Amino acid sequence: MFPVDISQNAKGRLLPPDVPFRFFATAILFHILAWLVLIWPAQAQTGLSWPVLAALHLITLGVLAMVAAGASFQLLPVATKRSVRSPDLCRAVYWMLAGGTLFFTVSLIAGFPIGVAVGGVMAALALVTVAVLLADNLLGVDDMPVVTGHAWIAALSLVAVEALGGMLALNLVFGFLGDRSPLLLAHGILAIFGFMGMLVQGFSTILLPMFSLSLAPSEKLGRIALTLNGSGLLLAVAGALVEEPLALSLGGVLGLCGMGLLAWTLVAAFKKRMRKRTGFFFLPIWTGMALGPLAILFGLAALFDLFPNAGALFIWLTVAGWLLTFLLGVLQRIMPFLASMHSATALGRTPLLSQLMAETLTKIHFVL
Image (cartoon, rainbow, N blue to C red; front, side, top):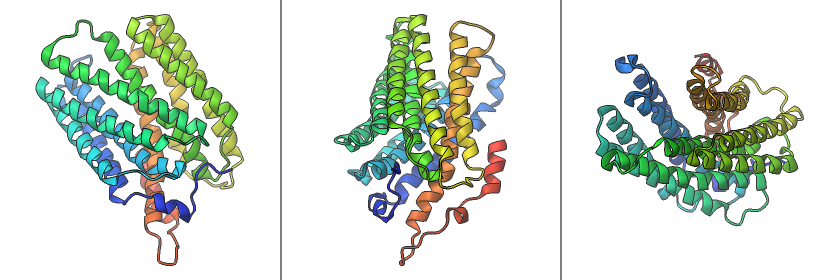
């Protein structure tokens, strides 16, 4: 069976177009801003300076979390066949997340600890609300265990991310923490692999078949991948908090196996697709999926200090190589798809996706 209802019946669960598109448009602006911050003249110093940390959060909060929130609000209801409870609450999430991200990152660059704490709390409230709305939509859904399982882990991880992030932000003002390294590492693992990673893997099982007109991937293998991903995340976070490299590395290996298995099921389903000509637009998606396991390997290398700069390569491959490449590739399909659904004529006809895509510009963007 097909994983998503893409018929006219799904249109009844579409949000007003201003809701998802405001998230996507703002993510594009934050993406540009992040690169501008990275080429800041003060970047001659080595290490994780405040501007570099600001650019990292512009990507994670302003791009990845922004896209994840907008996509979750729109695509999860289409998959679960349950409408979002309150579009106005989605709009409120947007303003808190956009304002909090901007205030947080500007305060980091300016060295303003109170502003960092305030911006962090605003973004945290927004993302906790995202988690609540996700949980509300998932309650009672039992016919998509792979998707909902990953989404539940993502929602719970998001709550933990914001709890740890709030502590770290408040610590800049009050200085009540001693060694922050375990909390920083756990915060990063939960944010990247718990929240974003689980959403990416869960949604990929419905988005890729939908875009390629293929059947859903194997549910049995998907359940195994879900178990590996969940147990790997739990071990990695526990290992980070208690500073136990063995548990952390074992968690990474389990996550690597889960990610690889899920990718294999998607490739197997993709080979049997009905839409034989998929064009260029799948290249960023497959590239991102291939770089995910590679990023974990570099993370394991950094954990045991196998070669210089392994940690920097791990962060770069994870954020820019895996998540950013995958999500921007998906965004290049989601936006025309939603635009076509909202542009249906009175006779029920929708524009062709090819009419709404700028393939040449997309190719240039991918190369850059």
